[in-house]
Length: 558
Image (tube, rainbow, N blue to C red; front, top):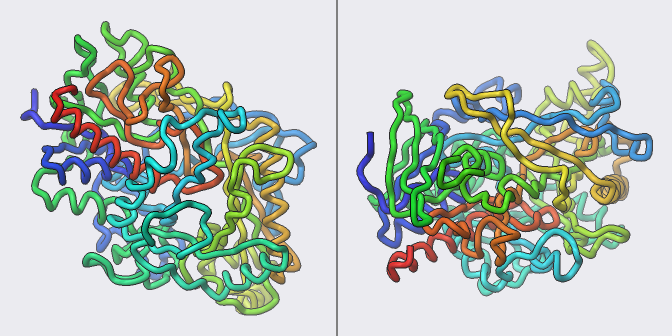
């Protein structure tokens, strides 16, 4: 059964899909957004006011977690023993000699993974966009920072980003929409420690309101952005881009609609999107253009599933690059107890950051940068239960007494670093595992070469040094990417580029062969950046893609 014609069908409603819906609808296009997951009501679904709030993460609803599988991960060696994850209470977090899967952290729902993100809103370092030509690794972006900068501004204004006037190493043509948040008392201690080491420690740029903005209230600093914001002060896509897109009257969002394929027609155009609606009924919808924005795991899966006579290797996979060049989150976190009460459970998550090693050539002995940041909330040390289980030794009354003494004294420093593509990291279709419709699941292959582990070793060392310089005498927990796959940011599986033989989409996100098929998510990233959170860059690229689509339509070149 065919639905009425829409100008553009968007598959996925996260950072890319939501920003595209906003940009297209404001220019007069009729947009249909198909989202596989459910809608969340921030005023009802995020239960931070309940007594058991700490025992629950972001709420799950039927269909809000996609399924995927993993190929066997690599063996662990004695050389990198200092990078093993551990806790003082429980010992090693990963047993045995093989890397294990912890999680691919994502949400299927209206707003995508921005529903539970911390809210970091970063621009890429300009040098990170020229990794191949300047450093001989990864690939160059087919556009430069100056071309993307106006779209960064647009995205920041829709979201309401709060950021500092200086200290982020990225040229700006206008200030942030809102002033930076004041650092928490605990982050002030980290800043003092970083300064003792000669490092710069500044306020982070965040999609969390420091002042009331466009009908949304200012942040109340509950510290639980990852559990969902019940006040809408966090700039997730549902309460920013999609809310404004719906207000135009030209955007329709259909949740719980699983897209199962895209029909490849003749004359290098796609004809329709095939999906199952919330009742399970098979449907087909046609449009002038299709934008795929499912993320760096599900986007290549959908394209590979869309095999046909006109696309025998999968849609947009003429050169076999769909799913290749996966880049993941290279992460480290160290936590310890400070001798003084800091009230470290209070404040905005990741409110402070160090960009000193963010440039691709900033870390001695390895290519690719990183950033360091305050991570008490991201380590989920904002409530007494986790402190009792992970930070405090003992039993019975002595344990309770110790908890009262140390609660609010946890300090955490974490780091996220560059991930460079390698032939052993990619996404393909699982040959055996199937979803509820009988289609193959995405299978994630992950491998960390020695140069990634060298960078991770540097990140761990700097995290420990900053904690020690801040007054932490003993650590109680550390964990990282070396022995467990735990990714929040994934990139690169449908790389953009100028040459059709070396990329999947062009500089505007349009597939090289398919004239009316576009991709607008982190799968198009040619490089990951040196630890920057990707949502703002995804949004900026999606706005740019959408405006190009509108221009092609006006010129009748779509």
